[in-house]
Length: 85
Image (cartoon, rainbow, N blue to C red):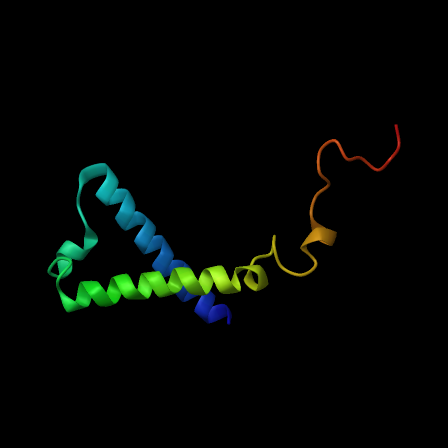
């Protein structure tokens, strides 16, 4: 499961950087592979989309902040002290 997390996370970073480039300078990484209509670009976009779905479904079990035992190990919330004044 850890390996799958690394792969999906990496693909999400690539996808996020792609959207950053599209937004800032109007350049799409998929243009390197022949544009949106190229089979290679479509496969890459599908893999990035599937990675997002996998991360949504498995995030809680992989995330240290959201997973089991996170509440017990998290830092105290400001304003909610130990009850002493």
